[in-house]
Amino acid sequence: MKINLSHIIEGWRNHLIPSSVLKEKILEISNQRLEICRRCEYNSVNAPGHTWLSNIYEHCTNCGCPLVQKTKCLSEGCEMKRWDAVLTEQEEDLLNIDEDGQTDKVEEDSSR
Image (cartoon, rainbow, N blue to C red):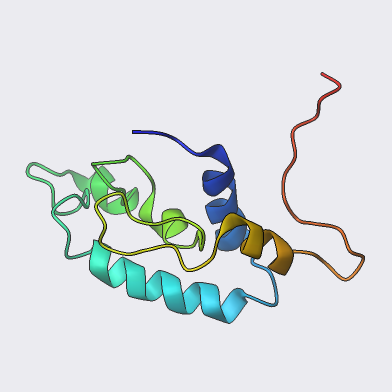
């Protein structure tokens, strides 16, 4: 399992402060993906012996990602091939540029 930090950040950003351009599309795609995930055997809620915590922190037991955020990452696909990315990372970056021409993308501080 390879963890992609930029996809994790993108999913959380789209969950907490979605781009005004993409807000409705993110919600639509996320709902479609969650519908698929909620029928999947790798959903923590469907796992044998799941607990109340699985219901609060609904996640994929295969990759470990929180499903509400993962399904909102438009450049991410399901590792189990249940759903695909709808944008490349470059396309999503272009759509997340604000009116000042600045990107919303989180960049690492190289001065540390």
